[in-house]
Image 1 (cartoon, rainbow, N blue to C red):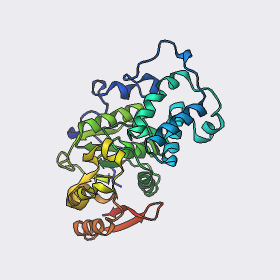
Image 2: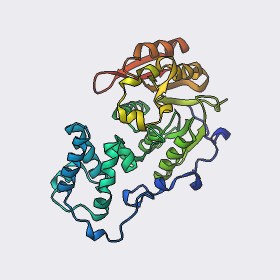
Image 3: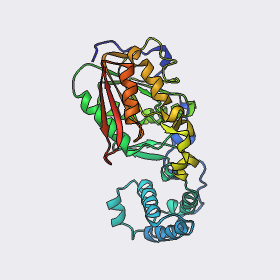
Image 4: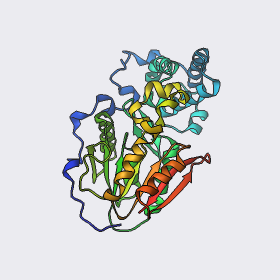
Length: 330
């Protein structure tokens, strides 16, 4: 990695998010503070045990056509998230009375599950690498496979004293770059996205985690990054081919942002554009990491090798044994 001074490039502006760019929901992520929930005047009137509330909700979801396992998983996720406890603690306390404020809004939450709204969006946050990241319909929900990509980068980065500049292209909620910074204090982060709304969510997460040395810019791949080079470039870009929409879960198609899901050229468009600029934007011994679709491994490997003929390309599988990650070593 290179030894250099990290001034804030003008493209990235201030690293401190502006408060007036954040929604009230993001500033108050707890379920009982959501501005679209009207608090009852007397919460003590609502009394129901957790297990009774779950049984009632399970019936509602099954009648709406949701499978029993999916219904149970969604309800456990909602309950544990709202109560801020793990699944083991939840199961050990199901006979306890549901907090009155939660009981009051429980029917509304279940009605949203009936409409296939993801429970992460209902709660307003999702787990990633041991932390909770604010999420809503402006960003994708972080997936477990992406945690494996982050873990790979962290293991490669190792320990040391020199700062490491990392560019996250298509940052979304900021889960990748912010986790890298939180796990390795050497990382100096640069996050871009084409969506102002996604950048607002990422900035809100950065503010919650009190991150320094993290800069944001609205950029379509490299178009706002002229003259900048990075030790590491990482991206989990849109990679689903438009013609494969029929394979997607209904809740994903309905609620998650399509500009973060789908790409042209059989889902390869963003990889092609990133590959074209790797030589210019990576340092002499820099590395790039990508999450890919499980059928895209050979195509992306060939693409990266063509862009950097002398680079070492590694294709890695996820926990399910599917091609999922690529590393490019310049």
